[in-house]
Amino acid sequence: MEAAVAAIRSSRAMVALAITGGGSGAIPRLLTRPGASRTVLEAQVPYGRLALTELLGAAPASRCSAETSRELAQAMYRRALRLRETSQLPVLGLGATAALVTDRARQGSHRVHVAVVDGFQCWEAAVHLRKNARTRADEEAIAEGVILRTLAEAMIGGDVDSAADSDQRLRIETAPLAHPCDVIAGGEQPWATVDHIDGRVRAGGALPDIVVPGSFNPLHAGHDALLKAALRRASGSAAYEISIANVDKSALSAAELDARVAGVPRYAKVVVTNAPTFVEKARLLPGTAFAVGADTAARILEPRYYGGAEGLAQALTELRELGARFHVAERRAGERRLRLDDLRVPPSAAGMFEAIPASEVDVDISSTELRERGGA
Image 1 (tube, one colour):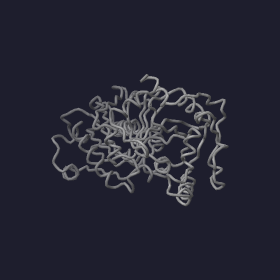
Image 2 (cartoon, one colour; image 1 turned 135 degrees about the vertical axis):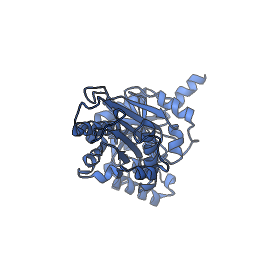
Image 3 (tube, helix red, strand yellow; image 1 turned 90 degrees about the vertical axis):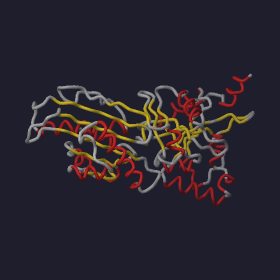
């Protein structure tokens, strides 16, 4: 459970949760840590029948079921969207119901149901326990573990398909709710991480140390070399970043986004945003560095994109305050090579830009050239 809590706290997302019937000890495990306010928006324990009915808006058919857990998760997700301080914050809603050891004869089975909703999909887990085989404290501990590990899987991912107890393994399933393009472009979630390992989309996720932004139409060896150069400079992780919106092009459709993501190597993660400018990207991913070609760096430093020199100065100041840094690789520009040294970097921003040696990213190809070859 400690590993699950650590994973949850490493996510950029926040959660609103409601737990009833058992497993509420998961709440203090999340709250009794410094910085818990960066993880938990709200926690409720609607233990009484009327409390549960009021939160759901109607009396549930069963107080402990997969359906009731899903309804709770949806209700808490809607609350999370209202309670977050900024739309740039990814949020989730969790609902958990349990039927555990009690002081009266229980007709049904002992069980735990958990659901997490993030707008993209619903994550669900269920564990059934041998009746009257454990104490209440033992079953509470199992329920806490199922809740925390399901939340960790929804927020970060990882190996949680391990034994929940001696009865059965914990399995977490997902059901789609909406396409990432619709959820992000509509402003419901600000960004998501697509994990090729398990094929799942997660609201927010852990902040990568470095991202390689681009349209990747298509992704080619130059992009791959840039990501590997970024990884050598990252203390943690690197990822590709695709923005649905683009300053110079039309917004991506759901089919186009799927195609771009499908072209990314399986070992790499993809961050999907609706942030066409680097200032917007940095607001979503504070402290993250960007690995870019010198041609992209030239556009970042071009005053006309900011309405003039004053606008550029303001943008660079905000980027610096957000902890943004730029690792710049050489790129071919017509008949010559464009390097970081060729760009006019203002003295105030000099420390934000660092050159990547040509030996690390020596691929003279572009997506445009590949598309033209394919159409020839």
